[in-house]
Amino acid sequence: QWFYLGVPLIEQIPSGINFVVGTYVIVELAEVGNEGVMYGLLTTVSNLPGTFGTMIMNILDGQLSYTADNIPDDTPEIRNGVAYSYLISYAFIITGCFWVLLLPPQKEQVAELKKNGGRQPHVAASIFYTLFVIMCVSITSNLMTMFESTKCAILAGGDGCPDDMPKGYLAGIFVPSGIVGLAILYKVFIAK
Image (cartoon, rainbow, N blue to C red):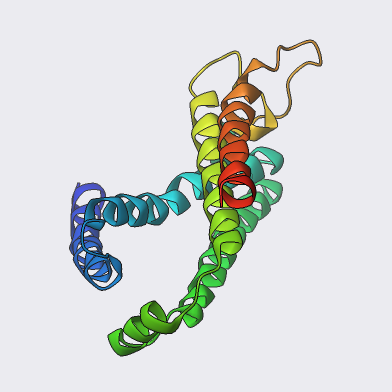
């Protein structure tokens, strides 16, 4: 009982510390009057890896040779599939740690970047659009896992659906992404 209750509770302590330290960044980055927008943006971006990672693992796990039903069989094939899933998971985590090298080391460097960093509207627009598309794909994929009719899709971690299955779920990705893409193109190139 302790294993199932104690460990998750203990994990919340470093998660809480991480949250508090992460929100201090907002104080350094936010301009006066934009604190709420900056908090919303940073919170959304910091929560994206959880949903996007779930989607990627659903897709990869769907292609491996094990399911919850056949894990008790404990064959070498199933062991290898589970081992591959752990290796892939840890590889993504370690790769994610390298992004820390792109961050400025101290708050003086952050202030310097804010003051003299320049303006790159095209880069900012492409980063925003990429993160928005990742959010749309993640939400759509995670919602697909909840419905029997779309559970079979590879995007939801299934083995693939029949060819005659309607593809209406893709509207959850392409419609918002298209609207935001057009708005960004208008803002960056036309309404300078």
